[in-house]
Amino acid sequence: MRGRLWLNLALVLIVALLAAIAWQQPGKTPPPPATRLTALDPGSVAHIAFHPPRGEPFALQREGETWFIEQPRLRAQPFRVRTLLELLTAPSAAQLAPADDQDNAFGVEPPQTRVVFDDTEIAFGLTNPVGLRRYVRVGDTVHLIEDRYYHHAASQWVDWVDRRLLPEGVTLTGLQLPDLTLSRADTGWQLDPPPPAIGADAITALVEEWQRAYAMDVEPAGELPGDAKPLRLEWDGGALDLGIVRDGDEWLLYRRDTPVRYRFSDNQGQRLLELPQQAPQPPAAAPPHHDHDHAAPTAADDAGA
Picture 1 (tube, one colour):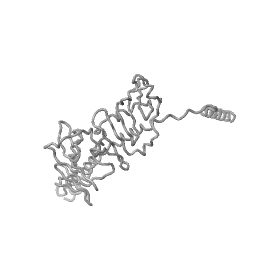
Picture 2 (cartoon, rainbow, N blue to C red):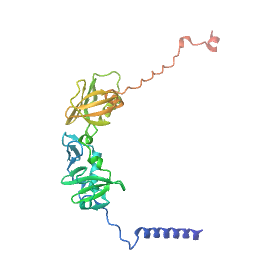
Picture 3 (cartoon, rainbow, N blue to C red):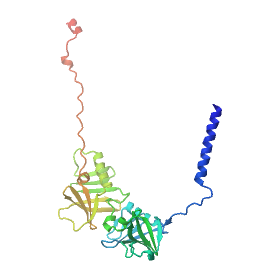
């Protein structure tokens, strides 16, 4: 048995050694690192200018860790900005000279859309039917990259508006709804008018709905409709004034400071406007009743009688 054990251990060591040799492949030159689209560090970029095929040019500006649309001034979607910044380090499958484009197959002159990261312009051309890649020009070089950035580069400003109502990290201190006003005090949330038999859990649930409110869509908006009911969200150092109207089976929340509106489903709207209904508590069980005055006579009672 001991000899077989040593044999098995030796075989395991031999297999591990062969795997290591195969992985290192001595004598073979490692492949060169992939060519990056640009040498820019995404973390250093502070300004992104868009020149979309439709709509007006617009720009994003970084302030600390937050990106804003410059005009109108609104928070931009963090995930979408991070995705677009990945374009700067995208691997280039091929590098070509614009002079090689005899039949305008690259489509970069003129480009389909342009995005400028600080001072570096990336011009988007046509797609290559092989491998679903797209031609993009950076300086005097045309690159072939994975086609996953064009729809971001060609979008309009409203597509970049953050769908969250509240800035990340803020905590509500006040909430004015059409039929209810809530204000945070040292003893907890105060309601006006005070609804009957509403527990702290229901109030907390309503406030949390507003804390994490995330719209289905954001749209450009004109003037506030006359039948819009006022809303106000307050937090330390800031506030947001809104107007809410019903639109079929959906709800529209209009910002009063900028020309946009947020679209919410009917279910979302109900959760934002109404305190959750608490299930009625079952009545307490009645204590057992002992009627000592009318107890049935016992055998001892009969004997005593």
